Image 1 (cartoon, rainbow, N blue to C red):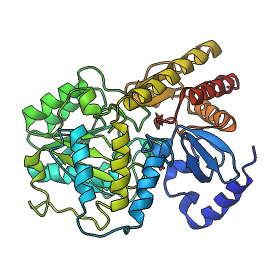
Image 2 (cartoon, protein in one colour):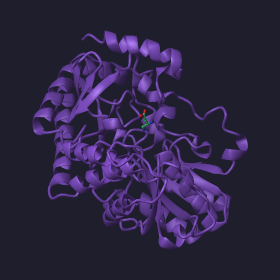
Image 3 (cartoon, protein in one colour):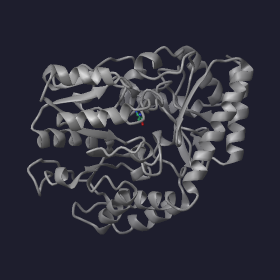
Image 4 (cartoon, rainbow, N blue to C red):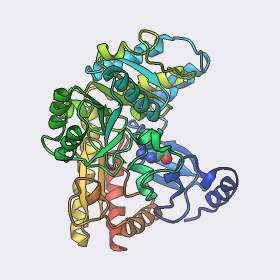
Length: 427
Ligand code: HOZ
């Protein structure tokens, strides 16, 4: 495979951007080799600068649930752009998208749009602290909620991929109120509530962890958190930046039937443009300025292009049969990969919730960070390289999720499974 243009572009980028990238995992450091520079995407496919074509299971790390350059989204964006790209003033598009989001996730009685998942989670925590008048928060090992200082503690995603337990530059004072519990372990949460009675403002959780690979919640875990937070007067925040419209059409909160106090969203609601949102119970959201005193603002918040991409994406997604098609694609990929892995004698542990999935190279089904971290990352790296050479683009880290889109039709899945079969034979 010729990737000489990508090599050239990467060398130049490295002189101008740290590591040649704008987000660390993209540099392929965990899997070795050279990142591909992407020129365009179409449906289930990516095309690199050298003209190579790949079936894409990263999908911009989740947002592109309709695939690349979906014609309905692209046409709506073309029309919107002619009317101006940003107003810094309200537009009806914000209300339209808010209505759509609330229709799909009715636990969000009110919401505010921001520009990224990081912004959404850091503001939801500010809001929880303002509402409860408490400072401490609980997060889980291996969960990732963006890169706000207070959340860069035992985080998943790129931090886990690069093996960084925390980050220099985060002041001790900023994280002194961040408590860390073990995912899927209610006792570890209870112990923190016992140690800090009346001090914990909120628990923030990925209801299906996606940033240490996909780890579903154990039975009763989310229910236990809901009960404990209610008893202790703390808020429960579901970070659905990744799971929103991916774990279920109505979010992980519908799949597991839990009503969180606050929800954060990103990725799919922006249809591939930069968007985030936080929202929840009206009583809590009324604290947000200008109605209440909790301040948060943003020049590009509610950006018309981002709103339109979200409106068209959610509009397509909720059409009859679309969600089912997505779930079927993820299910058939999962069972076919299982079959070829078994016949190759390679131990792979699979997890899947809705349209997001992981294949872990390990003997034991992982259920938290300590079991995920036992994965054979060298073997994953070899698998990744073999897949890329066969034209399949998966996330360049064992600790990230895989995604399907509506464009991952049965023939695309079949071609993928054939590549997996060949790749596993090379391990
Ligand atoms: N850590 C991000 C996904 N969980 C990766 C973002 C990116 O590199 O685009």
